[in-house]
Amino acid sequence: MRVGFLNINWTDVLDVFLVAVLLYQIYTLVRGSIASRVFLGYLFVYVFYLVVRGLGLGLLTAILQYFMGVGAVALIVIFQQEIRRFLLIIGKSTIYTNNGLLKRILGSSVVDVKSKNLKEIVEASKSIAANFTGALIVINKKDDLGKFIETGEMLDAKLSKPLLVSLFNQYSELHDGAVVIIDGRLKAARCVLPVADGVDVPSSLGFRHRAAMGMSEATDAVVIVISEQTGKISLAVEGELYSNIHPSELLGRLEEYLSSEVNHLVK
Ligand SMILES: Nc1ncnc2c1ncn2[C@@H]1O[C@H](COP(=O)(O)OP(=O)(O)OP(=O)(O)O)[C@@H](O)[C@H]1O
Image (cartoon, rainbow, N blue to C red; front, side, top):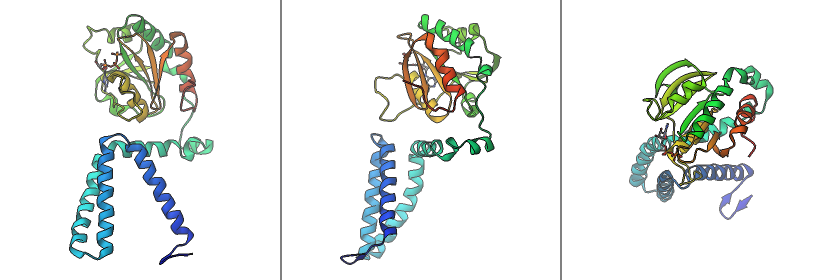
């Protein structure tokens, strides 16, 4: 098909469509963050470069080309978080998560909830909530949480309600940060979690709750957050915060998420 002096075929249309989708996805990921301004700036320079090249200005084209090359590396550094989130979204929505055969081949089996010692965790959470102590408890599903454990104090202790409660006591040296529980064992305390910083995170949320969201966004772990101010229990799953969970529902909610392939909780 000819439009003016342009010769357009269906692959060009597909090409433009895919670029538009990609740009839109990048835009939604960086929207509202400082990175979005950097992205727009880079896009502006790129369009300018295309115009300059089209006009045949050799010297300016060469300078801009060099600038774009260095800029591409700088972009990867600046957009680390966004690129990670983008790849996570792609990874979570590929056939891997929907295809039973692939899951079996790649070793993804249903989690054994009994081994997670959930009852002790739930009892401890109830007690912590009743005392307005504040806590951040990470429970693994399938992902390896090794790099988060390394940020804290390694314990590798048998999990029990008294131990968990005493760890979050304000006089405990290990009360700050998060406790990470792997397959029913208390692996580490005082761990630092990644903080969620997207535009969809309500600005009223404090850092304990943001850290829970960030951790559940970066991994498939479920995070229990207990507010020191309100004593309310929330759960973070797949980057979403489910606030004000009634203590009597906690065990059911945890089992529901950990025992299934479902990547969310029923609101
Ligand atoms: N990135 C993080 N990783 C682990 N723990 C964190 C992180 N950020 C904050 N915390 C924990 O949260 C505590 C501070 O919570 P903050 O008061 O800011 O949050 P909040 O969401 O308002 O919770 P609360 O309702 O309990 O006050 C810190 O003392 C620390 O123990």
